[in-house]
Image 1: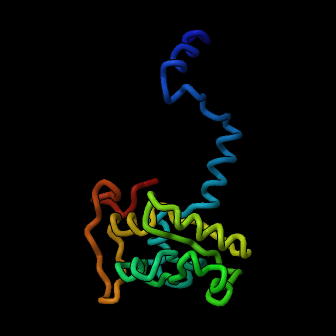
Image 2: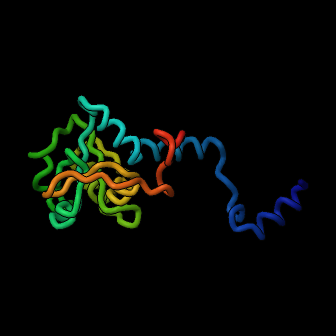
Image 3: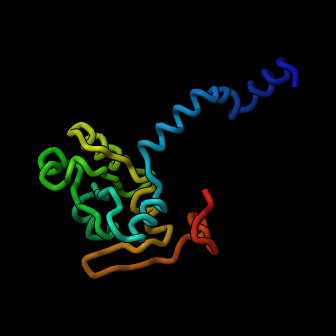
Length: 164
């Protein structure tokens, strides 16, 4: 493709209107993204393996939301209470993985920021509680544990993992 043809495609193609980043910039960006984020399936897999996962899971939602269901073993600490309670409830030497409702909610991001400002090591669990449930992982309520069927649009139907 000639440079003028490439320029013409980019001008009419909304995906390429802004060209992709250089490989060096992409490496830095995606590497940083993985330092800040954890995948629901990865968190569930580590927790299911038993033993010390090396991190603590923190649910930053309200008590009413927590009561609707939460990740088994998670610590409940609403974002508004992090400044006054985090240092009493959490160990700064143990990384914290925050979650909130789902991808349409930035509560886990706000909780992660509040924890980072206090000196905690922190990651955000992408997809939040919504994708925890949609991927078919067990959750707890005050009535006990539940395990929903996995949504085939979010989790592999006939495989242990998606191969990502």
